[in-house]
Amino acid sequence: MKKLFIQKISGLTCFCLVMFIGFISCKKEIKKKSIKIVETSRVENLPYYDDESFTPKWIKPGSDEQKNFHKIPDFEFINQLGDTITKKTFDNKIYITDFFFTSCPGICPKMTSNMIKIQEEFRNDSEILLLSHSVTPSIDSVSVLKEYADGYGILDNKWHLVTGDKTEIYNLGRNHYFVENDLGEPKGVDDFLHTENFLLIDKNSHIRGIYNGLNRASMTQLIIDIKALKKEENGS
Image (cartoon, rainbow, N blue to C red):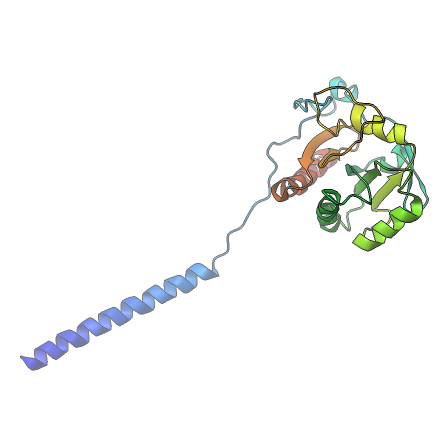
């Protein structure tokens, strides 16, 4: 009887041991598996935008409607190297743009840090450029912009920090980039331009996206949309 009891205990112990080993093996197997995250844009082709409401317009690429759609006009500014930057600088380029000032103590440092992430993601991609406009151009001289750029590790000729005529900068920001995304009272050059928005501009100078430059999820979506836009424009 005692021998039978011992045999039962031994059998139970072996069973438990086998189950335990199996459980551990399963856990190890689960740990080995990696979840693959596929980066996809929200839509096959990104929408177009032509006013401050940022109502998406779905336009067929290559159509007459696309060719006649709102575009960023010509401009001329000076970057941190003292070079003249115009619309031609961005010919056949996708670019991300924002508006900032070097002495900003609030949102600008965070925006710049997030734009650095975009720079690093596309560091070796010559089709992607960055453009930041100073909204205090009388203060942000070429030397001030260069010091700011060096302090953040901004790559010259990849990311242009520009200064210039205040009226031109404010007009471009409010009436062509619609960067303030504001449907309120019309504003003039004396009303300070300050916004956290980043805009995605395609190779034909069309606005293709607006993103919160302070939001991590929005930055992730921007990176995904840049890649999607590049595929769209390269026909792949």
